[in-house]
Every structure is written in C-alpha cells, then in structure tokens.
Length: 178
Image (cartoon, rainbow, N blue to C red; front, side):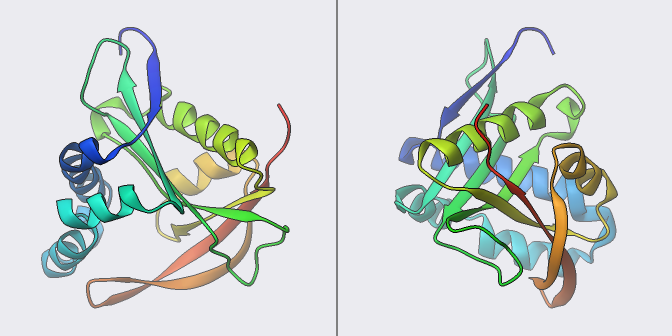
C-alpha cells in the first residue's frame, strides 16, 4: 500500500459504503468455513444498509473507518459498543470491540494495527478502562493478532451465524495511557 492509513469516525453518510465493506470483509474471512445458507442469513441480518444506518445513529456505537491516504473508500473498519459487558470481563467501564475487519487485499499492511490503535485512543478518550471482544475459536490469525496486542482470553460465549452455533473466545485488555 502506498502512503499512510487515515482513520476517521464513521457517519450516517457512510452507511452504504460500510454495508458493502462489512459484507465483503465478513465473506472473505468466513466464507470457506461456513455453509452458504448460514453465511447469507448472517450477512442479510447484520450488514444491511438500514441496519448499519441505525447503528451509525446509535450514540452507544462508534465506527472507525480506515482509508488509504489518497483514497475515499474504506479498506477496513472497527465497531465499538459502549454499555456492553460479558460476565468474564473485568473493569469498571469496559467497551466492546464488536468488529474489526480489513479487506483481504490489504491484510498485513498495518490497517488492522492502525484501527486497533485508534480503538484504544477512542476508548481512553471516552473514559473506558477495558476493551473486550469475541473472536471465533477457529480464526487463528485474528486470535494471534489480538494476543500480540496484549489481549488475553477470559471466557467464551456462543455466537449464532445463521443457524450454526459457534464458540467465540472472549478476550480483554486494559486500556492504558500511551
């Protein structure tokens, strides 16, 4: 990738581009490991433009978009949700990193790291002390990425993808001053 990565907050005007990016990156990540029916059911329920528009309008949700310095179309995104908690997560004020996805053609070029760094900055800015997430137990690339960032497994929960019950590892890390 030429140039640097720019991170900005998502807005209602990003709903269409975000819906497209979310569906593409989810499909790239999980298509080979799930049935087409389960994948399509999840994509339809989670990534419609209307659903993402509502999430962009929700004051408890923050989307961060990664864009190439010279580009206007996002190549990755993260979604943070305040006021969610898993029973295994410590901290007085946790925030959930519900999604972090990057287009396959830019994996390994620092986009995920730039997004995660921005997530920690945002969590710190708004007063959260812990970032937590769920990651599919069969996604070793993501698990290793989060471990490199200091996340540790603290529990698990069931994630429903279409009709398939899957096990997500719950990982958490304290938010620290830079």
